[in-house]
Image (cartoon, rainbow, N blue to C red):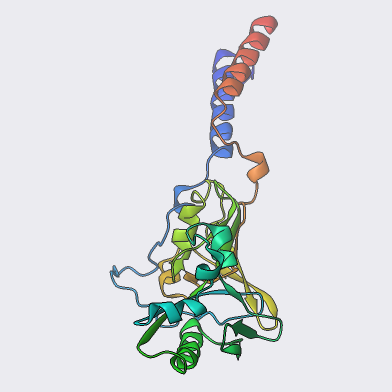
Length: 260
């Protein structure tokens, strides 16, 4: 079949159209979250190995003491002495206690307490014991102040996100970053997590429902989530190139007209 016959022209147009469509698309199967590997449907997932964050140097703890003797309790509350409003980030930071390089936190009247490697609940228990030596019928609140998670790569809104809740999972944090783009590599999302021996990289397959029972389903303070692009993203197109298609067809028709 000669390329410059009418049939040859339309064959070239169809081939060009198919190539452009394929170049601009990512298969739907690579975009659907939590696909079930087994034929049997599963409606209940149990996470029984959720990691527990332990306090490290550089952490900041917000402490609030409540007591029947409210006047005495205010001596332990930084917000009383600084007059700060704890509803914005800078004030929360200023009204917190830092864990120093040796792992100690220094509290008014109590002095230094070693908290490195403890969970928040464990730290709360030892602080409660010390406060009870000064006051009776008290209740304390201990929260981690600088809880940040960084999300970068193929997401719509890369950012360092401040977390104001005790637990958040991988899908929630990606939702806060505007979700992944069409060209995200969903089966190999990188989670970078600090350990005692340095940072460690974990690969997460968000296309599989097995992520729901993974120890990495829940995000921890200072985690970094890096969403990689699919291979060939540079050759793909964010939007279907209608202008390019029309221009190409016009060029082919013009060449066909010249050779007739």
